[in-house]
Image 1 (tube, one colour):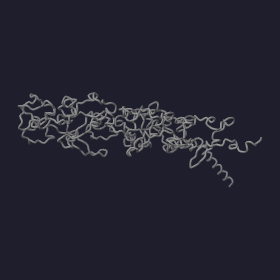
Image 2 (cartoon, rainbow, N blue to C red):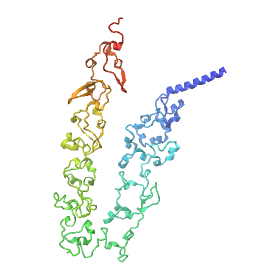
Image 3 (tube, rainbow, N blue to C red):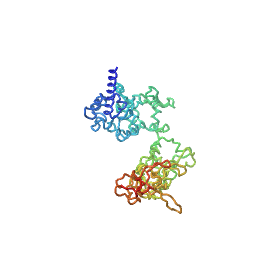
Length: 568
């Protein structure tokens, strides 16, 4: 029995010794993914004996990553990313995230991974692309007991490795022959004139789906619809159009008609180009009777100006500055849109475009105004091209509700902002009478200027809030010990002058001199006494603070006894 007790005690001692040794050696629990490596026997699976973490040890487990490094592929193949512990750290507990992103995950420079993010890709979040379903060899990760939903490896650079084939292999697998990274639609690099059927005349205005019918099978990635682009018949017009003549004139419609329009008929004995008004562009497709009214002669029609036939859509906005309403300054016979008024022309106006204005569509500024006379308001809207002035507030709402008018003056919004971006603000705070010094100079604007509802209950940022005393923004840590009464406008108010002891934005009382500012000068042994020895922490009215005043300067208030009568 005694022997059994001794054996039991020995076992208990060994176990406790092992646990104590492990606690002394291990700096903390491993993350969930590495928990199987816990224990003293597993240390050298990550650490080289007597050394730090070995990248070779890491790659002995992370075989997929090791293969990519050997192939010179991806981020980890770059020399500056060979040291694993620069980005991955351990022994911080089961829930610790093992990847350290220096500037945050969303700010990662993806070009270092061998695939720069451009166009619409730059707006995506990491996991929009890095999904398990996008990994071509997902089984390889499962075989290595890796989680495809958490890895950033395994993606291919081909478009169809992430996107499904909308065209069902009709047009090959090289998507970038027609599309770019900005957006799928439109396809800027597609030229229908390179196809077997070239688009001319009104065909250029026809919606694609009119000719390329909508198909429903096969369904790919849950998408049942796609357009048929190959295998279409176009040997004659009847492949798409109904023969209204029912075959009386044969199948070659082009003998009389052309793609400018069905009503543009080739009259054999008449050439309009020999008149003083040759037909060009869309005029070639206009019905004869649209210009030559019934009962009116064909000769003598006014045709010098566009306005002789067309309404002035701009309602005289350009008559004074243009050649008496000559529409050809901006438009051609090929159509009213797009306008021939170029960016170079706009730069000659009273408002040359700069910064972000260069990327704004014309209609965003030149929006619709009143409807034209004699027309239903819903059918004709006049765009505005003349403005009273070129100040920002002519188009933009003053989100500051006039708070900045006093300092901005004639410069308006441009006093602080620029045309590149509203978010870039340059403002001299000294103009407000409250110069930013010390840590205040490094404080964000919104930390002091917070949203309020002083203007028609609309939440806006308050800049003129009348707050320029320390106590307006900061809590009085001294619980009113340094308040003093000041008479202003006949009223007695309590103020705390923090600047008497503190510098701007500095909590340490660097300006305080105990021998000048207090009634008890420090000399002798008092110079070496810690502040807290004389100034204890107290709690009153639910607040904890350090007691600075009043402090009784008599010796026995701190040292006890009768200072006058004590003897050695």
